[in-house]
Length: 150
Image 1 (tube, rainbow, N blue to C red):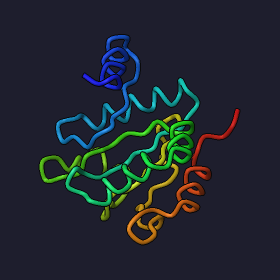
Image 2 (image 1 turned 135 degrees about the vertical axis):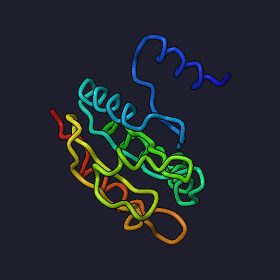
Image 3 (image 1 turned 90 degrees about the horizontal axis):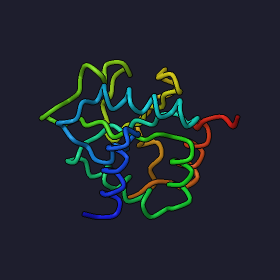
Image 4 (image 1 turned 90 degrees about the vertical axis):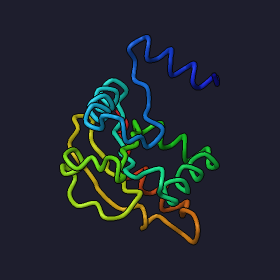
């Protein structure tokens, strides 16, 4: 097992929040969101829902973008509890996703405040540039909707 896997197991055993890092049709999206809201309250962050699926090439592009841009990943993780919500033929999570309006493109971002209230819902296409994402646009999005300093 990898070090990150061991950390997730340890956090789970301690009853602490373990981030949802993969689109998984078997997960309970409503519980994942509720758990993220609790963690957001505890940590003073907001919740960022990344809605998509393992079938989605742009979802993987987004993952690679964050992984290869450590400064942007740090900005995201300092300001948000990020949760991946699956949308696929196996589980469209229609009931929970209906809270956030119509979602027609993927990946799709929804930002919630620390109480679970939706602040912003938008397709990530507006953040794209060429075959990746635009650094300035991603930073602007994360900064605009991120938690306010206390």
